[in-house]
Structure formats: C-alpha cells, structure tokens
Image 1 (cartoon, rainbow, N blue to C red):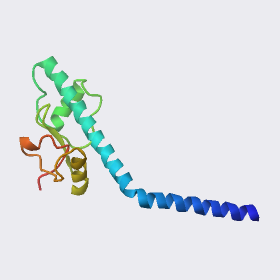
Image 2 (cartoon, rainbow, N blue to C red):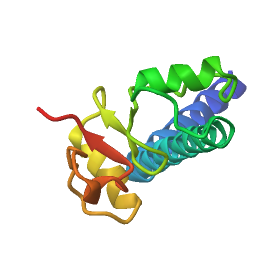
Image 3 (cartoon, rainbow, N blue to C red):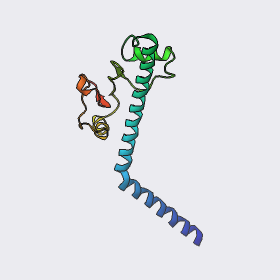
Length: 139
C-alpha cells in the first residue's frame, strides 16, 4: 500500500511539473511554432525559385502561366517532385508569396515580425511588399 501511495504522489508531481512548464512556457512554444512555419515557407519559396531558375536556363523563358499553372508546369517538366502545400502566388523568381487563408492575421504578423519586417500583413499587391514572407489575401 505504501508503494501505491508513493507512486500516486510521484505521478501527481510529474503532472504538476508538466502543466507548470506548459503554463509558463506557452509563449515560447508558440514562438517556436511560428518560427518553424516561417522557415518552412521560406524553404518552399527557395525551392520554387530554384526550380524556376533551372526551367528558365533550359527553356530560355519562365514557365507559362502564374500561380498554380506555373507550379504544375514545373512539376510536370520534372523540376519539382511535388508542389509545396498552400496556395502560392508567383509572378517571377523574385516575386512570390503564400497568401494566408487558413491562418489568422495575428500569425501572419508574428511571422513577418520574426523575419524583421513590419508587424502588418500587407496584401502583397505591390513590389514593395514582395519580400514579406507571408501576406494576406485582398479582402
């Protein structure tokens, strides 16, 4: 009986420490997830830009079409094994972004802040906003 009581107390202390860590470490975990999402988006953009560059070197032009049409052309030509998830807007190798649709404007602002830009989420409809990692769709 003594071992059962000691075991129950150990489990209770373990749960309390875990809950305390989550309670006090919550913002750290949120920032880490936002940073991971940002890194994933930047990596996907680099993959698309590299595939477009190789396509342009081989065909002396960029793939015809914009957005999903260009991504499908890159995949069917063998320059990408799979299209990165999400809806990408592509105008050239240096102007591409992933508009937010399922994300909140707050998470968009947090990602842009981590990247060193204004906290705002621009609609990405001008050349000045092409470097923002995440933009919102025009409402």
